[in-house]
Amino acid sequence: MSYAVPLPPADRRDLAPRWAREFAAGFGYWLAFLLVLEPGNILRSLPHGGLDWDQEVLRITAASLLGASVTPAILALAQRHPIEGPGRWRRAGLHLAAWVGLAAILIVASCVAAEWLLERERQPLAEAVADHLVLNGPLLVFCLAGLDGIAHAAHFFRRTQAPAAQTPALPYLSRVSVKTRGRMQVVELDQVDWIESQGNYLALHCGQEVHLIRETSRRLETQLDPQRFARIHRRTIVALDRVRGVRRLSGGDGVVRLRDGTELRLSRGFRAQLDGLFDVAKA
Image 1 (tube, rainbow, N blue to C red):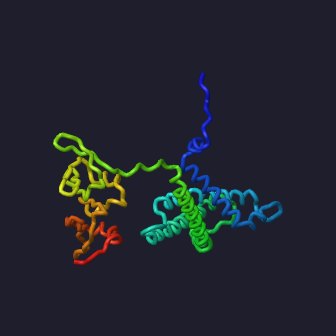
Image 2: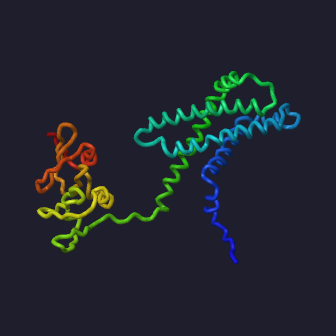
């Protein structure tokens, strides 16, 4: 005999597809927006109020469904192109264009739906679209902007809460094993002056000694303490406490001079993270 085990609340929630949850949330948002926007129409729709109650309910429900249909697009836009950080003004322009475009789509769709659903004296479709673009276009753009703002706030809240649920980060690497003359030995990373890519190997420069390990610089870099090591070139990582100074060259590149006199090439793309740590002289 088998028994059905009730799912915990989070699992029951996940049974509904994401788009369905977003559509339902959007329907509630647009319904609330319409009810707040048009209380006069609702009051007049009551018995003896002058408007057809059934027609008014149908109109508000259809408008809420139309608004809900574009809600997933707004939520996806806020998640993939948030208005923050570098390039935020370009992304703000993208959001504004999306609001205007979606508002126009909603107006055209609502005019077509009104032609089909509502039993009233109708005006030509082109005239109805033009009138609604002028009368309701700015209001719809404002409503879409508000929905976008709520989506941004929700993503921000989730990001601020996420670290508490994440697993603790692994400690940074402090030593590596190397093979020398057929024997394994341990090299402490605080003895490493700089690291150089050599094909499929990395050369760990420790004073006069050089140890080779079979590893990629990109993968090793993710395991190094960024307070102790920094990349200065696509092939070179340097120990920050071994740096004596940085000299700029024409064209944006530079030279990193170590305490033992070794000079290493500094690419312009990695110069910014060293400029604030060391005195920079220009050649």
